[in-house]
Image (cartoon, rainbow, N blue to C red; front, side, top):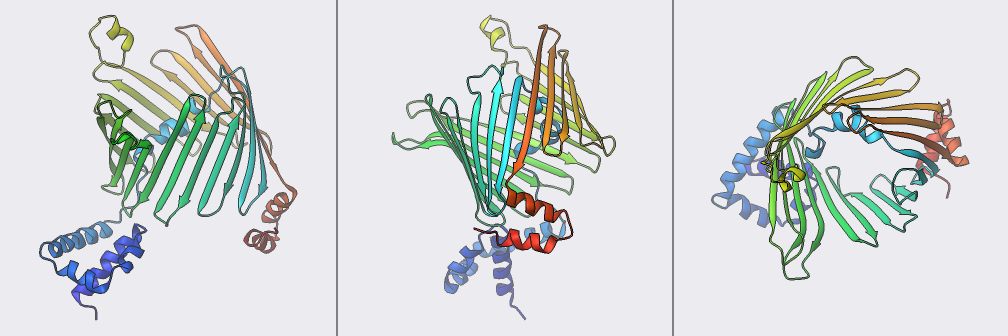
Length: 388
């Protein structure tokens, strides 16, 4: 039978393993851990932590979504904003290999009002590593990478370089049993004996099986000679089986409220409200000498999925602006997207047409065909040990 000290040590190691840090506990000498456990004050802290961990484990809480994803159902799934474009666009994606994954994608755009009209992207990935690189016709370079350190820890980087400068973002995600922690830094530098750049921390904690609270903080200093500034934001998210409500409030007085309702298996409705409680975001009015006035915008939208794999997203906001996006597979590997935005106040209209074409190499096509037929054992063997 294990002694209380041995049981406590095992509980601590299990907690570290859940965070992907189990190797650290094994790396410490046994006499060191004994001294830590018996140190006055620390033993009481460990005892309190054990009781708290046991209570959290008994509550059946799960890992929550990221703090930055509290409103993802509204902004990324229901409303058509992210699916709308202007002009013509075509994305050609070719899968050259499955394991490791290797894709090549080319994007063409005309009439989008931007200088970048062509982009070439390559993607490589395994179960633990992911790399993506892109180059456009303006010679702007983009790179993104991720590596899975453990089942609970993922580190990522993003880099962008152009004739206007360079930008580097480093991130680490830690998914605990009932919390999610994100650490981020952008362009960190110690060249002038002072830290400059942007440091960010986002934390989400499951309170109940449906309620999640979040906290975000940002510290930044653009250059060493400039003073530093900091800000924070608070958030809450409640998710039931049929609806999700969320809200985020920043220190600058900006509030975002979102609500998503699942009406049927194929229909979802959403409402999003952006509030400026201080009125400081209207720079034109402030420069004209007008006093700050609180303001806000509300957007209501709906998403409808059809049996033929078509999807319609539509929205209207409080200023009278209308928008919609329609996705439809015109062929098994070709998806067409039609979008439009009508601003009745400014009497303007934007129309976009996009095509996404998927192609596969012969070996990949054979593997996918085998997965869809009875010859699944041979397909799994191919994926486990693909030909070189």
